[in-house]
Image 1 (cartoon, one colour):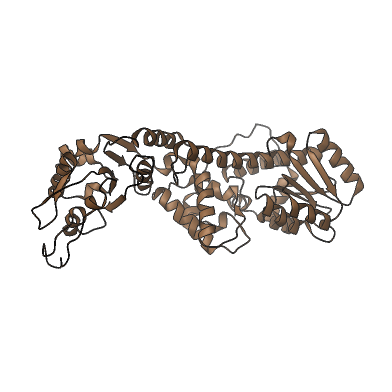
Image 2 (cartoon, one colour):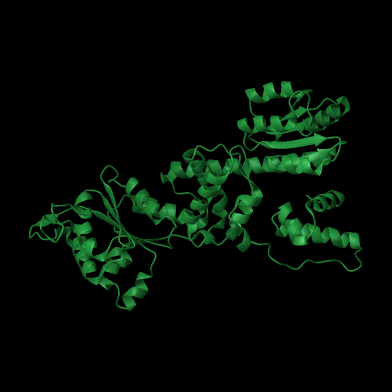
Length: 455
């Protein structure tokens, strides 16, 4: 869909008067409308190509509207589906919305409302397209692989990687656990002249302190109990390439001194060996600890700190770039579906809104793990919604309490409309949560929404 005027609409209805009115109205608005009078004909069209909008009778002849919706979504997962019926049916409407319909309308149709829903659906399609297009352009421009985000903080990271990568400079990446420091290190290496040489990693916090020196510099046979063979360390393995030291703040002061020597002279000795080895290694270090504070407290060498931070990159936490969450959710959802062989329709906007309100203490890593868990536990063919999100996240993102303005002299019906409308906004337009917040039944809420024409 290049723009709204080029949007394609498939109308499935047997009623000549409705077809005449809808086709005439949408043609006048600039849509490209095709009409068929039964589900089988619609199925054949949908099986052949994608439409931007599907308007269909729920009980279409031969193949019903729910099945047509599933076929349409196979071709265009973001298709705007509007189901229509003669009689109101709250239960079927709820099921239709759960499976991905954007709206459920009863005859006679309100053409203005119909077009408003179409505009809403096309707007969502445009947003998804822009997100995919933006990611493609960022990858094309920066070549940053699995880094995802369009926030100002992430754009600064992309720019820093682009400027730093071609140089030999030592880099210090700072940020909370789970923000993607390792991905940035990989991106720097991949975009550097050393891309064809080894990229070697060592997490300094994951190895017992007594073994870290051997891991870094290697050892010869007999250097210590259990050292039966000569073994290369990470610096040797990374020769001509890049060594990434994660959680560098965990190194002991003695090891910090040895690391400083390697950075200054590019030489070291294996444990138990007197021979000096020379290497050509670019070092990238990362930490989630405040190294400057550790220097002031005497827990980190100041000379090493200044040698490491030739260039620094500060990784924003996920709560500092909430606008990236929808794009991250989409990325992790697709990855999890592929990895776990799951065929799921997607994640609703309401569910994404809940994820955007959570503070994510574990940052991007936590979000990725949550999405993978949701995908694994879901039945294939479903559209993931708020109820699929872990309870601890839903509990901590409960609707906020905020004041609402009610005009003096408003009658009770107006007061009720304002209260429902404002509560819907606070609940991210999640009807189940809104009903729970107002302590009313879901059927009652649907009736009130229709009564007051609240969308």
